[in-house]
Image: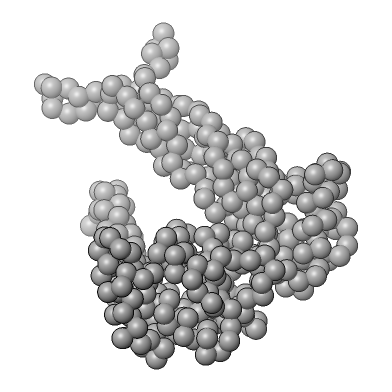
Length: 375
């Protein structure tokens, strides 16, 4: 069944595909906003299958991050971790710590506590005969073609959730980016499907004051009223602080051997993509909105250029280059607003900004020596 605008949901289910889409960042962003259900009447369902998948994916991230960190530390060894360096203990703590091995499990456990997740033991609600029947009859979430065995985790989660929802007479909103989930939910009496995580969270947040506030803000923006423009300026100012001095990875091309020597960036332009504000969290004295914005940043990068000397068999430094580029991208923002939502816009404060998909690397184009320095 597709999700309806007026339906009242009493539980939310989030697939592993959503955790992956939001970078497995359990403590921040939209995944972090699942903590709002801890003290609410809404059940946040975390089937044991999804819990296991998320932990497994986190473990892979941890191993990859550890390998990258170890390489970076080894590359810096000559200058930071030489014999007798005071920093050698820090390297040992980072690389050899036993905590790294269990960090994925501890993060998942902490996430469960913070979100108040109801960990659904699928085996308590699953009929193996029903599972096999759907498998052999190619019923959703099993597809008629492809490797159906890969769909067993999805089937287990959905059949168990369906049984739990029927037993408790509860309507569940499932958030996923998976066609098999969508096909299953279209025939389900208890589970609806959506791919929009922010929109899903907003369906649980249509209480009077926040909803009226967003409706009024949207209207004021469309009518280009001054107080709405001032409110957007507060958001822009916070975004400016967010990007002040940020340091993305440096990418470039050159006929010469080049190395990055550092960069820093700043906000150049900011514009709301639309006036579609979604409420993803709220309390008595604050509200968290998701909005989309077009963001332009300017970045200045330093590079060193060198050329291979076939006689000495070494790279010879031929000069430094400074390059500046502009990059524009669209990202969702999580905007935390505090104050009296029933009062004037001018009295509200933008407490925090989180850029959901910030730019992480910048291409500075083709680098050439600045021979003018030697004139």
